[in-house]
Structure formats: C-alpha cells, structure tokens
Image 1: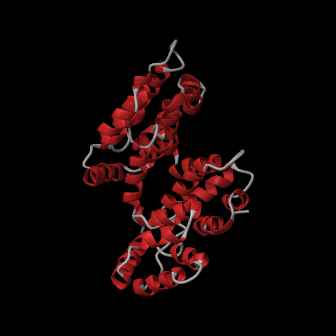
Image 2: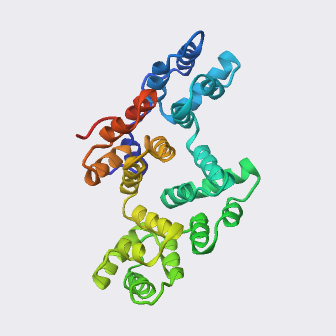
Image 3: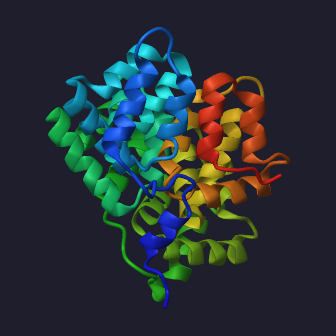
Length: 325
C-alpha cells in the first residue's frame, strides 16, 4: 500500500515529533535554562530542535500557563544575534513564519525580492491560499495589493499569478507540444523576448505538466529552459522564472541550491540560511541534503560547519540532522 503524499513528506524531515512528549516538563526545562545567572543555551537548542513545531507551540502555551510569561519574549531577552533569530524562527508556526517573512520583505526599506521569489515559487497552492488568508487576518491588508504596490512589470505580473494559486491540475497531454512551441517562439526564436508567454505558461500549468513541456522544449530548441531564461530575461523576473522552473522540477533541489549559494563564496547570507533550515527541517531536509551533495563538493553538514559558529552552528547542525560525507 502506498503512503499518502503527506506521510512521505513527514518522513523526509530531519526534525520529528518527540515520542514521550510532555509540554509542561519541557516548559520547565526552558524556564530553568533561562533562570538566574547565565543562560544554558545548549539545553535550549537541544530541546527545541528535537520537538516538532506543533509541540513547540504546546510548550509555548504551557510556559505561559505555568509562568505567566511569553516564552518567545523570554528567549529574545536571553539570546542574541543569529542564534536568537534561528530560535525565534523555530518557535513560530510555519504559516505565521511565511506571512511575517513576506510582510517584512515588502514593508522594510526597499523590497526583499529574494523572499518573495522563494516563498511564492516553492509553496503548494493550498499553502499560498492559507498565506493570503492569514495575511489578511493578521494585517487587515491584501497581500496581492501590497506586493503589486511594491513591485513592477513582468515580475509583478508573475507574482500576482502565483498568488492566485490556481494552477491547472495534472497533465494537458494536448498542450505539451504547443506550450513548448510557444515558449520557443517567445524566447529563442524572437528578437527580444515575449515575457508574457513565459509568465502565462510557467505561472498556470501544473508541475508535472511543466516537466513534460521542459523535455519537449529541450528537443525543440536544443537548450534546457533554464539556459534560455538566463539568456532572454534579467533581474528579478529572471530569478522568479528560474525559481518556478526549478520548483516544478524538484522543490528539494531548488532549496539545496538556495542553501548552497547562501554559503558559497565570501560571507554568508544568514537570513536565507536560517529561513530555509527553519521552514524545511520538518518537510524535506533529507531530500535537500541528498540534492545538496549532487551540486556541492561538500555535504550540507560540512558547509554549515565551515561557515557558521557557536550555538548558532550547533542548532543548524541539529536541524541538518546528519552528515552525508
């Protein structure tokens, strides 16, 4: 008997629910770790990386009941820097985390296009619908209007299409060839690029349909669709089109690449590193690790070891959940 899809996803996370879970005991452990002089960071990170997000929410509730205080505020008061950001991320429910990330990406100084691209290209249709609803509830604003007001051109159009979360289901056998032709005519065959065709097809077809279109496109043009997008488009639109294509091919491979580039070269993009490790640790981190190994001479574990330090590194390594040397 095949497992339902969500069961497979749960199995692919590195962080799982703790078997003999007691929210009150955990709340006490955290309280003791922060009480008095000095903080036992090790106790905090060991505990929180070995509980599921649902369990962490129960610990938060138990902490308030037992101590009349907000656990997240107490953690913020005791921890600092990137380690604090990571722990607060782990304490946030996944939907709220996405909603807050998007809000900060739009409402901060300038727009953080990277966050818009990553979340809207990689989340399922249902997740996007939940995000839109939760955003309205939380801020009494329309996410679509906020994003549209902060972005422009074809980039804005594709984001708005993704926000509709209404991709066709399944494979439209009859349209595979014509979609591939339309993309070829819009890009490689044209002087200048008809971005609208790329946006319509990549924004509205199902992932399985798109994978077949990419194969047909390769036969037709002699290029992978990614190569054509690299050549034919630029800036934020290029980043978003590539993210949509990569997520249609494989979401874990997309995140493996995102993690790789967050640490490759000089300096580390800690915001991206934290966001991906927090949001994928219970979803598909095992798959991400094996995809990472295909594109990097080092394992994800080894790269985190070399790029981070202190309690921040310890917590990230626990979320990574093992080495694939």
